[in-house]
Length: 83
Image (cartoon, rainbow, N blue to C red; front, side, top):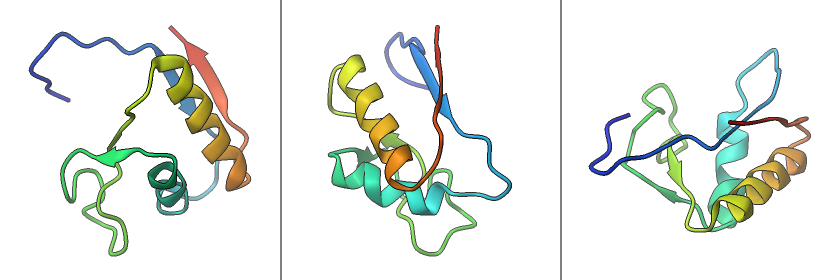
């Protein structure tokens, strides 16, 4: 992903799943205040989502907490890697 300013990845949160769950997860992130970067980004194969790339408006610890909470709301077991 290209960004206009220096950016670093602080944390990766994912779940082991046998099928794709981003369409179920996206509304929970939106409800938490996340916004879409660009319509269609990462969701070209999806009819119902605006995009699958979202921006978190909070500090890194608050973002991490919101993402983990959203994962748990949709019954995903989050795996957290802090870099």
